[in-house]
Length: 96
Image 1: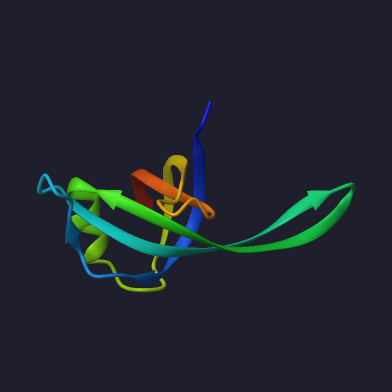
Image 2: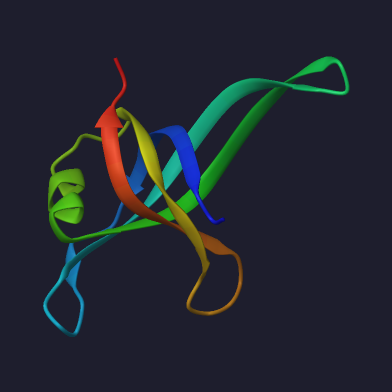
């Protein structure tokens, strides 16, 4: 199963674009920070992840300020150039 749920803030947003069939698409960079336990030791985790949203999610995320936190859910795909992964956002909710 390819499913990812991630709490993150919007670190960078590129201009809203449209796919060849006219679907709104938004490319962005998400930033995550947390603490995880590894081999019984606390470890600080920080990562940046490229992400893409389509449709009404793309339009809504394009209006959000940088630094705002959300819980994102979706799945991972290879990037178009085959170098790295991209988080395909299917849903999101604001963090309280």
